[in-house]
Image 1 (cartoon, rainbow, N blue to C red):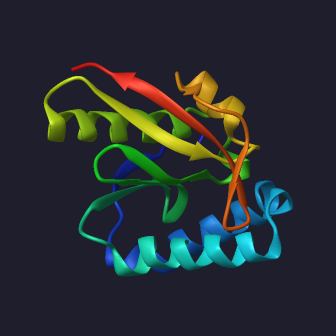
Image 2 (cartoon, helix red, strand yellow):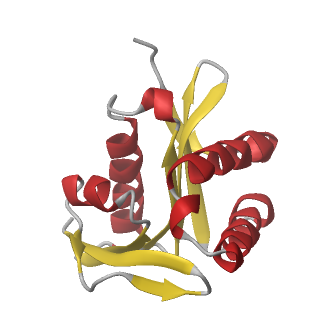
Length: 155
């Protein structure tokens, strides 16, 4: 089994991180979005990865010299992007990314808080295994279908 590490994405890793998002999105999420939703998703993903807004952080999982997972969190509570390379599923990488993100959010808030996500239909069972619960049924905004989910975090 290949070992992996998690840390902040560096500017030199932006293109590789975006390529991971693109591959995973096309494999698992694209089928549930309209054409307008696909356009909106990639617009937002490019902004988060390449423009690095000040109100977010982006963690990546690395195996050797390859980005194999990523998690982008905005405003220290909202998961914006979360993907793991399909060949690295079921190795604990996704759980480790979420756990590291939760820790960072709790350190920022230093109090009980709620982390939320607008989960893709594919990822809903993954988030459920990670302790998130749906707060409403399937929604659609700008052609993107998702399930709103939340998880209470306690320091």
